[in-house]
Image 1: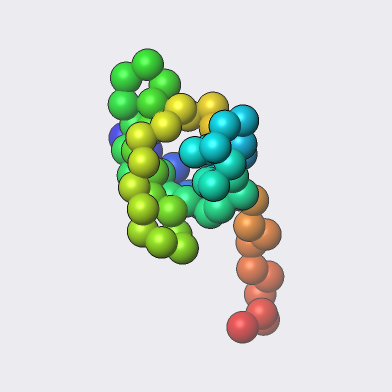
Image 2: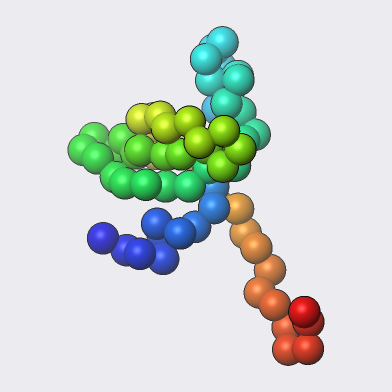
Length: 70
């Protein structure tokens, strides 16, 4: 399993029903991958853990630090 992907920050992107609309836009961390495109995630703000589709996640790109930045 790719450990870099496991520490990557994601954003939940789907909001097409009442359950998903409460999760839309929240930051989450990928805890594990499962069969048939399912993933196990944990939301950063509440610690809530959910099994959802891999396609519901969007990677958050964080700019690398430059030398001299604190």
